Image (cartoon, rainbow, N blue to C red; front, top):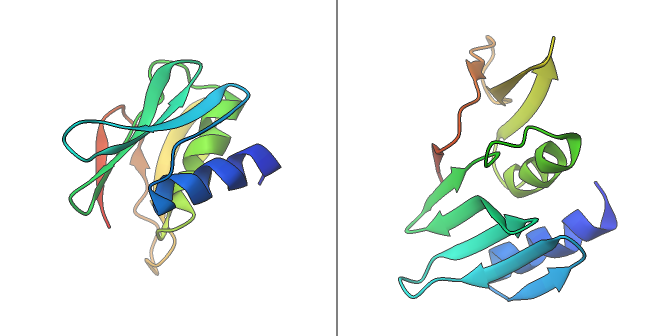
Length: 107
């Protein structure tokens, strides 16, 4: 995991604002913690839920930032033949789901 991702993920889970390069962690008035990449919302943490999105940009950097956010869960994103999948590493049998923007994960 890149240093930028580590620092932003730490801030995201510590509920701290931070801006490093193209990644920014902020707060909403409803108490949500938000991670943005190039100004696009890619992760929102609120009420024990994590909402993840590529914001329409399925790039390596977006996937790397999302995997950083997901590193505190049992989930991860990988790509196969150009398609993103969400996997749960605690499942004995793979039950991967094709990634879509707005996926909700319980924390």
